[in-house]
Image (tube, rainbow over all chains, first blue to last red; front, side, top):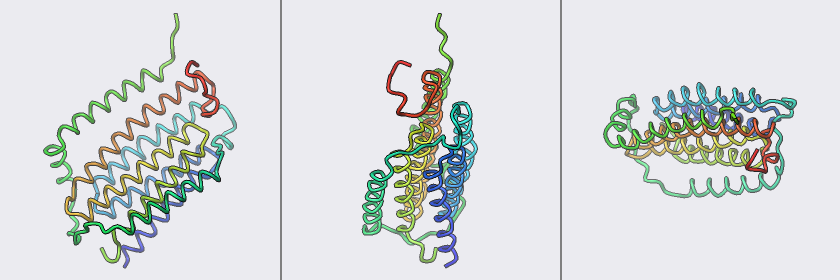
Length: 164
Length: 103
């Protein structure tokens, strides 16, 4: 009973923050609302017993990606920041999004998933680390290569072009 | 976990996905569009972790959600670098203004 109430609170917080990301006209406010949505999702992970994923979400998203986004906002702000996040074509986009939401929600709730009875919650770090270094060792190494390439690529793309 | 079932999380994921899609479709600021993509990736992660909790492979879904977070970090770094490069060429990051490949 109480866990259901906690879920509804977290879900309402997450969805309200996500809606604020979409509907505010100031891009800095959008970024701060995105932080709320990411924190809400991290809390949902913890509620689902994925404590390690929740902490990774905090470190990488809130600590990394959001700060990067704010830096990009500040490096590129030339116009008035209060109207920096314009939106156009809201009506057709709303129709399309609501239609897709209705289809997804209907499909998700009508299907019979192979649900198992819930097991007792245990700390997940041991299991996740084991999975990374046994079954998923190749994707893990490839992902580290992808990150390296992405960082070098980011430096190459964003540097000032020097013409001689 | 009481009355809380997998459906709750699937609907939450669908809702986040729709909001992110709406964001990508309506925003004209390139950084706003990237924020919408982050919302979509998070909705996928909610589903991964929820299915990991409610089915009998407890760690596969969590490992996949960590891969998604990793690739989201790479995507954000590359995406924001492209936004900065566009800004240097066009003095603007409104996607309507960037209609040429050569800045």
